[in-house]
Length: 452
Image (cartoon, rainbow, N blue to C red):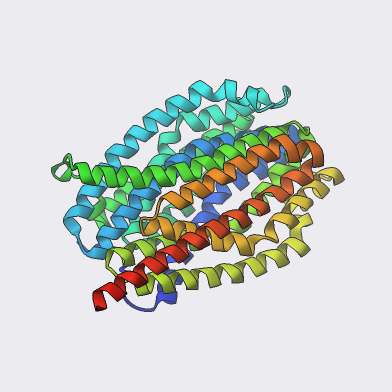
């Protein structure tokens, strides 16, 4: 049966990036709609308090799921290299091990998340009036986190072999299911924030089932096969190191966000509501930058596996130029449309909430040009096997967020939180630029040595 894949080691680089990235972007938009639908329905039906409860849960949820997503993306990087090199046997072995390692991750993270939920939310200064709702929402999401991990695993493996369309189709279906169930559970059944959590979990389960069916029919090379499952110490180490490096990168960033959320929580429910809305809008515009970075990572992985360093370099440059174009568009939207977006998302008419959210949006999106460079280089460096510097950069981000929570927020209030991430992006962009320059120099020396 025909396998649905895309080889990005040949043909136009820019076209490959765009053709591969567009379905990912659309899919990411629909995936983001999971959260946007929850936010809009909860904000308009249940009010600001319920919205703040969901917003307070976001950093903890992102910590658990971000770590798992980073791990599965790391596994996919190895699969992309084998695909680019045309090594089908190793690819199948890597895919089989990915299933096993992902299952173990799901068990550990679910248990850890549920056991630490209440102590963590208390430590984050979650206001007493919303803590029960926050734990109710997050507890359901964490209980079924294996569903999210399964989707990330399957979608990551499909993208590794160049198939970015199938995950899109399944997300579109699941988002419609999610929105319908949101209205049913939250509106008709009156289940509160727990209803929104159940709607998200069920709709994600739909996408997982569809992914499995599609893989069995169109991407057989990615289907679990016990005959290819064997103890390959070198391959397990490669998968684990790459996966852990990307997982730690995401986790360290998320830990910083959890700490920062504690500072936001201390500023009151109105600020939590404003920050929740601002982050949702910011995340929507950030999706395209993340998509470009993801496409660049897969492109770099396939071409690095094929030994095409010239295409790796050109792919990174084209990806950065694409990110600049989107950043310019995002700034224009932030300036002219932020207020109606905030109002539509939250259903609030509170001027304090609108002004506070606007401040965050304007400051953050203005630095998207820097963020685009950071994301493309960080993802591409992971794609070509340079793991240490991206992780160290994430560690610096964690340290700066800790300092901000202890110093900037108490001294400058919410403005201190607004300026933090742009400061981090600038510092980390410089770090990855230096590492990329080192990589280019090392390859240049290798070429000179061969020619001599």
